Image (cartoon, rainbow, N blue to C red; front, side, top):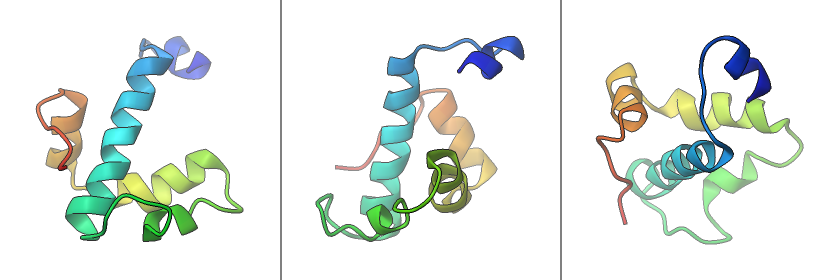
Amino acid sequence: MFHASDEGFRFTAEELVSVVGALEIEVIVAKDGEPVDGGSTLWRHMWGRRYLDYLLDHVVARFGEEELRGFAADERRPVA
């Protein structure tokens, strides 16, 4: 968040968690068709990785540009 702020992107930790959480839920429910629980496939990709690598490679990569713009603009709500 510190470096994002240096680049002119200002947001709170709560805003970041809200968007990242919505993206993760959307991947699990809408894209993978799974329930959100300890057995969700997405969580397995998190282990042994840096969190940013996991987010970019296994969460953000699952969305197109328009979908991401919708989340950034708070136009989409997660499924479930």
